[in-house]
Image (cartoon, rainbow, N blue to C red; front, top):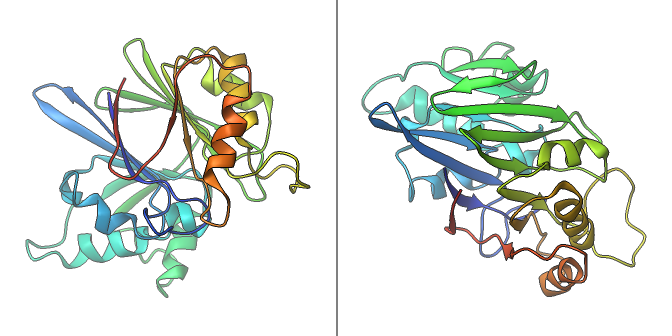
Amino acid sequence: MKLTIVGCAGSYPGPESPASCYLVQDEFEGRTWSIILDMGNGALGALHRYVDPLEIDAVFLSHLHADHCIDMTSYYVLRKYHPTGPQPQLPVWGPRGSERRLSKAYDLPKGGMTEEFEFHRFEGPVHIGPFTIEAREVEHPVTAYAMRITVGDKVLAYTGDSGVTPVLNEIASQADLLLAEASFLEGVDNPPALHLTGLEAAALAHEAGAKRLVLTHMPAWHDHERIIADAHSGPFKGPIHVAEAGATYRI
């Protein structure tokens, strides 16, 4: 697998990156398969740098906060009004109510995006080309999912947005790469069941037996160096990377 960081800013687009969006690709049956994990603010424009948006095979939305899904409204415009004509339905997996939420965001009636997107709820493993995607509900103020993406014996684990929960340990178990949000600072009164700190992300990587850790979703309002230092203070002894827009990782 190849993971490309399209956007990694937490809570809203930052000065150097769109909000959450991750491109995962692999070669299978003579072509490149491409899936998207989340489509936050500003992500669609940046996505053009790495792949033709019309060549995406599926989208997976971890939850329906704007910094993880709102550019699906722009993607709707691209697929509906592209100069080559309306595009085929694109499969989209997400929480219950995804279509209604996104249609409302674009001021469309319920069902207004169903010609462009084929919406599915997370209900079991999803098989797309070489990928198997498993989603598990995690701790967040809205229905939210972490995802485990497998190709052969290689595993990419993505926390989405979540507070500490044993579910994350299951999703990240023995992952070759753990893409973990790190939105909070250690030593302050953080809201419960919302996000991870850098230390908690590193502890998760250690407990789950992950091989590599990539920290993401750090908001612009925090000192990123402090979050990174928190992660390095933890028990995880493997490589710790910091997500940057345009960075790529081979899994």
